Picture 1: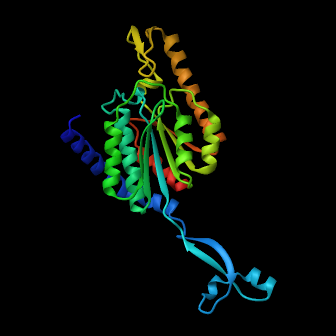
Picture 2 (picture 1 turned 180 degrees about the horizontal axis):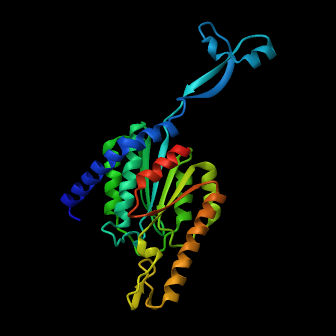
Picture 3 (picture 1 turned 90 degrees about the horizontal axis):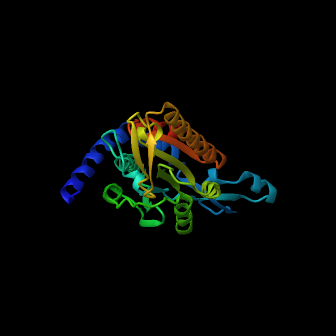
Amino acid sequence: MEIKDIVKKVKQIEIRTRKKTEASLMGQYHSAFKGQGMTFSEVRPYQFGDEIRRIDWNKTARFREPFVKVMEEERELTMMILVDISASMDYGTKGQLKREYVAEIAASLGFSAAGNNDKVGLILFADKVYKVIPPQKGRKHILSIISNILTADYVPAVSKIDKAMEYMMGIFKRKSLVFLFSDFEDAYDSKMLRVASKKHQLLGMRIYDEKDNEIPDVGYALLYDAETGKEVWANTSSARWRYTFAEAQKQKVRALEEDFANSSASFMNMNTGADYSKMLYNYFQKK
């Protein structure tokens, strides 16, 4: 895309997502993740001028002198968006590529975070980490993230989700909200999910096109793997072949759901034609 087309696309996404965000998502995000604004720091002896409501009555009774709880302002949250840029994510049959769908969802999440005064960062990965945008605040930063998702070079390589998670945890030590976008076409180390979800609040989002799950009857067809370059002829006219393929995809999704559940992480299976705002709204509501 030329620069003018990129700017136009980003602007269109901003307009669409802002309407959805302001209508529903921002409020749910705020209530789910804002917290009390204050967090406990320590207990110390009472000093003249301290607020009575801060007195720690248990410790006061134990030591027979007044102690108060010291509270400090809770720092803003950090949201990390991890996007798989392997070639299979640069695909779509319903008028929207997976990458465009991801950009819209990331925009909604980003504007929700911005409305909560939270920082947002981005990691683009495939077989390795290709780009990192450190967490920052503000509308311009969110627009930059959208643009980077849309214009990234989607590489013909096997995606290594566990490597991306390992990299993120090595760089960003503080507990964060982590949104992982991928079509999960490649194997990964499930142990890394468990490690990541212990440290961060993780939501995995499988982005798929309807043709990823079910292939129509188009006769003999040459199927091409965009990530490995492998080609194979298949008789899509065979009802048995189509059934076997669809069942294998269903089994893959069930395994993903089980992996994330066992890791105490959340998971969404999102068709590029689905209304993601409802799914995110329900996710925030549960939190």
